[in-house]
Image (cartoon, rainbow, N blue to C red):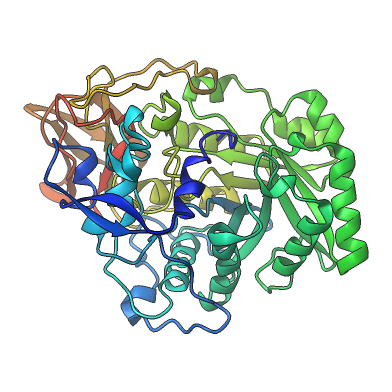
Length: 517
């Protein structure tokens, strides 16, 4: 994520008052994918946030209940290992922006619609191509309920905490940051929050005195992550966006004015040897944002070894894909190969920490959080590697599961609505685009796996454990099944129809799971 990117879009939208916006009378996600449906005008806006200091969440128990554990292996519980897995939380995209039914909410009307926000994103076919998985409207403090549910989902997947992007020091994004601190306690989980100061954002343009004051407010919460008895962690995005002297002054003010000692986790956008050497003397740990295409991942030098040679811990960036309609760029992820490659590299290079990039940045298509497009697949598969990372052992498969991933269109397909298209050159991506369907299995014992794509079908002999195979993408439905000794032990049909053309260009990978969610 280059945060000088398109943050201008999301935060601005969240600060809107009452404006006239197009309302799309369709399901929450179909609008971005199918020809136009009826439009009408309505006056609405994103509401302000409840005062969480006094509000009480009166949602149903089901809304706050943790997601059921249905993965194929026992997941390592949060904060039970010295090796930590954090996920980068991006405040502009919480579960809901207005607590409305999905068919009429802000995501549907304005972020997924090509004509949303009065045509602001029409030239790129709309701001987003995916959204958080919708839920019915809630009563009481719905935002805190949503944040609590997200923390429980992350914790169930073996994530130890969020690194929350500090992009502003007031307004909705700040309120969500504070809300996460409170929700971590309400969640009943041993879940931690690390302030991640975005050096590319408006927050970093404030005075060090102002920034220190706001950070000190966050460190008062029990959920704030401590590296030892006396030091809190302060993370960053693009640490090199500020000078070493600037970071040292911020740390000095925090300590002298508020008694808060911090250990800097310097996450660099450019983790060159020069930057690693420059930031090592003031940092507890170093890290970078990672790479989003497999060829680039395989070609990366061993940054963890460099950090360790400088006497510092290393936080590896793990990602699944990166698709940015608003920047007209994407990186070819080759189904879930990027996810596997970044995790395998983090494990092989003995990283101390991992940061999933990201939990919920839908403007870049990098989300691991449960969504309409990929359900819980990315989170499930990541939790396998997170467990392996923490335990330094391969998890035992206790349940047969199948996952399929595919696009809903060929990468060459032209959209029905004319707009500017994406190119596969994000971050200098070295991986050529391809049209494939991937099946990933977690099997207790070998089985025959049949993958159907449109009118084509192919059967494989899949071994015990985790296994993948790919076939060409075709129009039609995608499904897969696993048969052992004449009995079907797992099956899945993707709800995402592959079409020759979609309303807008959509190059993210969709997925579905035999767990049925």
